[in-house]
Image (tube, rainbow, N blue to C red; front, side, top):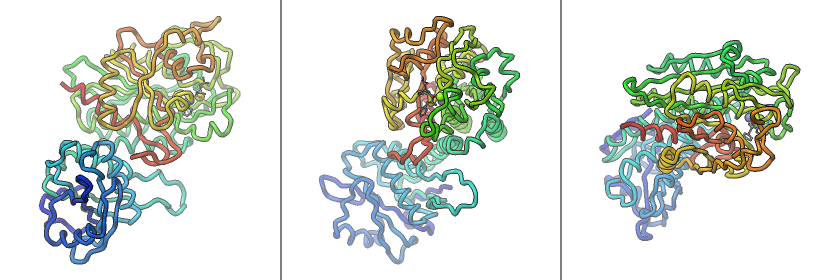
Length: 497
Ligand code: BES
Ligand code: MG
Ligand code: ZN
């Protein structure tokens, strides 16, 4: 919930008031115009030496105000304000407000027009997104007393730019609805978030967001389409696979169409190449690609962006059992290319290959962008903070890099090294689904590339490191991060002419 109040003295009662400070040439200054009664609150603290260090939050109590708790928020050096720093600052603020059980908060915005290093809109956007990013609760299971700090329920932005802030906050809320959806799906139990659950989630979105058309293929239909790789991975699972297609036509007059493909392995045991327990521990995260593309289309549709976007999600468990697909066997893809199974644990590229083929045969994509928790090698390469991406088109890559800059979701372009194609060659099939233990993220991408037509622009994000993390990172919470939703919404907006 949100409200905007341009007049300071007219603000409503709340649990907390937040006043911003920064340092200008080493001197701490309040970053907003305050009225006399607040000047009285601020003066002693400034005298006592509040330094306004970035992300410092200092609590004072004052009588005669509409709030009992007053927080001084340090923005750091005024000459160094930037979007990523503000995201961090305002997400730290959220943490403190939640710790203090402040459900209703008045947040004074700086007099942004005087800032030198950042525009008014950018400042407000980062502040709003920072506030929202850590205002998230994990899905709750059972009756255990909830250990998490309570959420902020109502934010009121106060100050001369409050009216400018209103649409920015409302948009950020729409974007974060998508981010939260992604996080919830990834954080949910693997036994709950099954392929059918993902399909039902998509159908549910189709009912509440205008313009979304959802269709779903079951095991028989997947086989009928000739998706031999997808069907192979799904063989061992007791839960039925689903191919989920979510179409959003925001610009019917245009032929331009972005197809988003998301890896939806709802649990990756490794299959017969069973993972050791420790490596399997977090494998409910292996549908993060699916959750990401669901998040993205839901945002694009709820913002009614004038674009055509379709999400394609191959969803299955990668299970062990007497029906499981076997290493050494050869399976035929929907494209006709044959694949020798070198490892049943390299299942992601198999289901993605068929989904990418499906997209090209049925959806006339201008570009395909896939998200997948694809390789452990990517985690080794770039860790938890940066997603590697591969791309067959420099203009697309450049636009994605710009979106990354804007959203502070870090990405790094990886090379599609042609020479490594030899590592995935096979004597008995067109290719093998594993390489030779070297450059594993690249050989996985090269495998996918073989299913992408030359005329289709393509980017592949390996989000194995960034989608799900053992600890809080910068402005995202512990566990599912929702990485990629903000990035892609920003990229897709750049396509609007
Ligand atoms: N789902 C995993 C990759 C993964 C690892 C995701 C860590 C998130 C965190 C994928 O299906 C997998 O098992 N990949 C194998 C490929 C190998 C057998 C060629 C891997 O990376 O070990
Ligand atoms: Mg695997
Ligand atoms: Zn996997």
